[in-house]
Length: 518
Image (cartoon, rainbow, N blue to C red; front, side, top):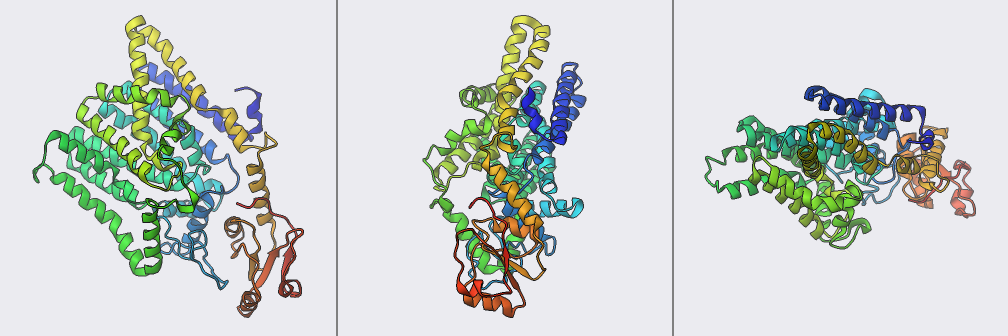
């Protein structure tokens, strides 16, 4: 790795080295044809690597981790009332998802998971990311099992490696990539639904159909209707199989019924308990398809251009042959073709949507990883045909080393997440602000004001006090005083304060300066 890794903390470096050793041991066990041990070691490697990822940023990331962290923290006090401003003491309009009182911007399942982690392990940036660590590690055996049902053992093992070495997903686990915890959970439950459906197709056992339906419902509870992705593949498979009778599709209908049973109660409850907020959230979700929400726009090929950023810069050259081989080598080509329909459907849907966000298509991590693994597997097959099993046994560890080197740029991770590079203002800014918020010694009746940008979100998380980006006008100041609250205001150098603030001796002036305006 070189000397550059010395900028990681001793714990981070220890986790990274342990993950490397775990991967080496897993590959060795696989070569010795001990599949159970190699899988177990690969899962352990995932736990170590994702724990490393969860420690990369000792602060709340700007988009969207800080919002998720604050709402999850507030859920500890009232699990059925997700709030951003838990104490909206200032008289103002809470009419945007960045300043809502009741926060229904996303469904609550992933937030409940974070709240449970806070309850069990205390409130911290690391405990915020523990659910991501566990879901990320579980995705490894899920991808392996799914791949084995569709192809063979070696492709299954390589698919686990593909998931493990997807740096974009690793940074999602650590909260850095947009949508972070929300999309990790969304991807997780969608992947579980696809796995369950594949098991059902292989075994014909109804319990797997019901599991697929349940996991699809849980996916909807993390985000919204793209959680039904498994039914796109399922429906395509049935059309290709020419199975149209109710009897033959009874398990599909049962699965759909269970999806509704899992997802609907929260929708009914939220519309009953918070009707205005629920309507606003529903309308905002619908506008994502027709309007560039929050300025998130781009050309129709936006998500195709993002492909190498998510799966590695060389993946764009390999994905075509990989998808072909996934279909060609599959034990059931109709099932593999249904997978291709799901991939095409996701890219078509999000390409047509006007709002473009970088992580929308990452829900395809499982099928894409298995496809890339199929291509890797084909390479090993050709090596074995040419040089026999001994040569393949030599090429496999070399191939794994090359895979890790091409897909996991440790030096780039250090540049993004440590103070190694002097121009890494993002990390310096958020570390500084975190220390400012944590060092504040304010009375419990204080209300933080003039918190520039949207850093009022982190301020509320770290201080437990209401925080606002504005300077209160005179009416707001008098209203706060009538409620027994004191204004604590960040004094910005060179900024002239209104007279009702500068002349009010009860206002607490905070001299520490915040950095950044995002």
